[in-house]
Length: 598
Image 1 (cartoon, one colour):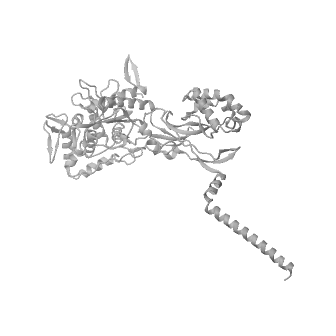
Image 2 (cartoon, helix red, strand yellow):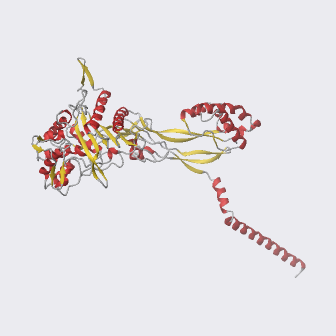
Image 3 (cartoon, helix red, strand yellow):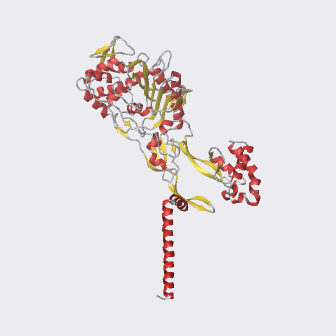
C-alpha cells in the first residue's frame, strides 16, 4: 500500500471516529435530558403553550313577584398593582412619584381600610421590591368603589402605565337579609352550584354556561383573552311578595321570641292560585336569637288536632256520619282497648259532630272514627289519599317530605290517627288541605315560582296547578266550613275564639275561619311528653270570600301554651296587616268595612 493510500485510510478512520463520537454525544445528551432534565424542560414547555381557563357565568337572579331582588350575584373586585411596568420606572420613576400621593389619598377616601400614609408606605415598599402582584386593598371592593377609583389620574392612564388592574369576583347576596332566606336557599361557596332551597331546585337555570379564555403573553404581560363568551344564568321569578313576607316573618318572630319557642314556621298562600306569598322558618340559636336554619315548612311532623278536620271530611263524605250526629264525652278519660284518650277541655256533655270539632275533643273524634271505620281502616286511609294529601311533588323546594299516612293494623292506632297521631304531614301539606276547603273544594298545588326569565322576558311560565278538582262533596264542604267558623267565632266552645285574656284568632277587621292543633312532642327514650307541645293554627280569610290561607306552627313554647292564643293570634295579626296591605278595606258611613268587590 502506498503512502498516499495509507493516508487516505487514516483520514477516513479519523472522520468515522469523529462522527461516531458526535453520535454518541448526541445520544448521551438525549438520554441525559430525558432522565435528568425532563421535568424542568416540561415546565418550560408548559409556559410556552397558552393556557385555557374558564370564564364563570353570572348566576341569575331570584326575584319576588314584583320584580324585587331576593338573591343576586353582585360583582366585587380585588385591586392589584404590577409595580414592574416600564412606564412607572421611566425618567427615574417620575410618573410613580407624581401620582403616589393622590393614589394613596383616593384609596384611603374611597376604600378606607388604611390611612393615606399607610397606603403610601405599602405602595413605596412594593415599588422598591418590584412586586409583580401587590394586593392593594385587603378585601374586595364593590362596583361603586371601583368606578370611583377609576377616576384617579394614574389609574385612568390604564394598566400598562399605572400597573393597576382589577380582578372580578362575584358574590351571592340577599338584599333583604334573612327574609325568606331558607326558602331562597344558598350556594356552595362563591360561584358554586345550588346547595338548598330554590337555589338548588333551579340550579340548572340559574347557573348559566361558563365561557373560556386563553392566557397569552401580550406586550410583555400575560393577559386573559376571551375565546368563548359566558352565557349568564336565567332569572327565577317567585310568587313571594317581599312586603307580605316581611309581615309574616315579623309576626312569627314576635311570637316565637315571646314564647321562647324552639322553632316557628308560618306560610301564607293565595287561595285561588296556590301561590305562596310568604314563607318563614325561624330556629332559636344557643344565644336565644332566631334565624332561618331549617325549612320546617316541608318537613313532616305529627299534626295533632288539625288532622281532625281531615278525618271528619273522610267520614262525612263516606256517609259514615252526619254533621248533626251526637257523641257523648265525659270528664273522665275514655279507655279504648290498650289506649286512654283524654280531652284538653274535659266536660260531661253530648256534642254534635260540628261542636266536637269546634271544641277539639279527642274523645269525640276517637269514638266517631273508630265506630265509622272499625274493621275497614284501609278505606279511611284510601279516602284521605284521594283528597290529594299524599301527592309526592307538592312544591319546588328540594327535600320536601311526602306525607306519611299508613293503613293502621289495629283500631287502637286508628283511634289515635283520628286526632293527629301516628300520621305525619308537613305544614305545607296541611296548608294545602285547608286551602282546598277555602277554595270550594279545589286543591291547588303550592307554588313558589311563576316564570323563568331572560333579560326581563319570559322563557318559561308556570301556571296554577290543580291537584284535585274537589276533595269532597258540596254538602260535606259546607258542613266543615260551618264547623271551622265555630272554632273562631263560638265563644263558648271555639278553641280559637275570644276569651277574657285574649282575642286569639277573632278580629274586628277581618273574618277568619280555621282550626287549632296541639300535639304532644315525642321525646326519644321517654315517649310522649305532657310538658312539651307543638302548637298550630291554620285558617283562611276573609271567611266570606277567601283570598288567603295561612298556617302558623310553633314548636315547644313555654308554659302556659294554647294554640289559639299562640298561633291563632299570630294568624290574626298577619290577616289584618295583609288585608290592609292589599287595599281591601273601604269606609262607608265613617265605618271601616271589608270591600267584597275585591
